[in-house]
Length: 237
Image: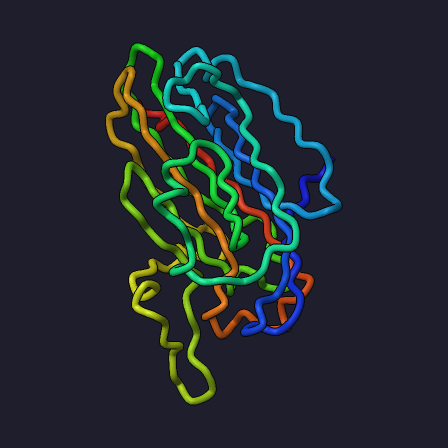
């Protein structure tokens, strides 16, 4: 069954348009594990098998630091009728202190905290990247993705293009340090060097539709986007 990820937008930008999304983080425990999915009302069930060979190497995921219940699949609650917002509205202190899914009572955005652990006996290099697999109506132009790895924030956005006057958009200071997506389909790529046995990494994933972005217009109404966050063991490890 096809995995659909739909973000719905309604109303004009400064009036805060409405969108619907959910988040799915799945551990394949293989050469690619850790899947983030945004989906809408028409999404089907998600099923993924575990590669036992990779599981034997001991790389696992959990939504709790004690790893009392490690799982091959972690899924957040869906967030219906979310509206566009901006970085300064994020309650990041609460977000990173909340394991698993975080729900903001005032604003609507995806926020999920999880942990990666090496329970094996070998030190390995772990590569992870975020890839856009569907981008209907070019919704990615207005999206912001924040990755917090062990307390270090990195904000990502699709590269801006100048308007007809050759001018680039001006953002609040919180958004000026955004890194550009590697390409139209690859958001980012990083390597965890020498991931040792019993070592744990903490990740928080946050995604929202940025209301300050000039591309957040009625042109992307009804758009959808799908992203995958994949962790892989370097074949040479």
